[in-house]
Length: 292
Length: 312
Image: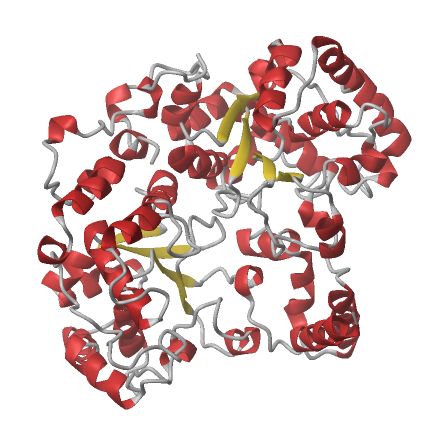
């Protein structure tokens, strides 16, 4: 009984000094910018892009990224208080009305599941021979991370915020296809100023090759990969459509059956169903069982 | 008031301390907080442990949440006299209770919440109310709480209400959409309309009881409904207003239990304001069966909802 009290007292003092991780109690400022996505959707890459754009004097790497674009789940409150404003903050949370401005990155869930499967191998959460079917089952149920399922996470943001001037939706695939163009969209949305040269520099400094090289030099400098397997890289394929070769067709079909309506809305072509088979986006008004 | 300032003040009351770290009087506050935290006596805010067998009674503010808390508390504790003085204990609101208290509650717990979508909440009763009535009710409540200037008119209130800046929980649309969008149709999600509860309190309470797995016969349901009537609650408010977080230090001339009915907006909400609300939120109002009054809105002009519209 004594030890928990001591532990709690230490935690309490840490809290008083601002050395605790704020989690959900982060005090949000009116000019904060949140970079939100479901995990494994290009969030880290976008963090590098924005940090390199915002802090050109300090090339971004795995050791400073948590300070430049921090995560409320991994950086102390004191570090948050010391950030220059407007702050750019990373998040994987479902809809939160307190976020004043949101850049939401979405990625094809069929690629997300493959990426998360390999990330969990790296984190030693699953074995190398762990069957992908089993992982897809957990992925669909939202059990592979604490931020809901892919469908839930995206749905909470789309339903509440799409069309809102405070919300910018970016597709990872578009970001890959023309990084400079998409980054320019973010710059406009955030009312920042950046010349084409500055954007090009940020893109170059955040390339997959550079991120891989830095990862080799700093394999333990970031919470995302601390203590993880070093034979697997955090920056993996950095591509789109890998699921076509890596995900067995029946598994892709399960994902499409669950979230086809959201995927179609986001422009992700379905492999297993003709559009007519997919639940219509239609309106919720038409569903049966709705109160009068 | 700014949305974020409100957030800081209400959502996690511990955060008030965060405002000005460094000043001596704040240091004492920090220290007090450290001790409270160590003893588990700090307010839980939304930083508390959620268990998978918890059920949450969730709604946007001013949507009948307190009434349903009384209904459920009376149903579950037939031998207690439910009132404002003990409602925080009988149907707890985590935001104003200590973590220790929440931890000691018998499980499965039923908790009250005004939070927008929270992935940790597995089993949810979502209570929704016509936003035109919510607007009127929240206006009076905000006057009572002195959240808005005493001379602000209802008409002036509508703009910040639509923008979601009058509440720390987002706008009515954001709140309802965040829950209904991803969860509607899920067996562990029960959508209840305040209006239906008013029209048939016994029948609707029975549905909620069934969802909670509470076996209650007609007699017990009727007793709970009678003990939670607006008249009873008004009487209790007069006796216990200072013993409840919701009414403590508020303008006593404005009651907490106000009209307790539906459609009051037809008399008190200016036509122009009705139109503003309907233009902004008609797709979701249509979905919930709230008839539009101001003008016929073209259903082809459906924005967000039609494009993304089904639960996942």
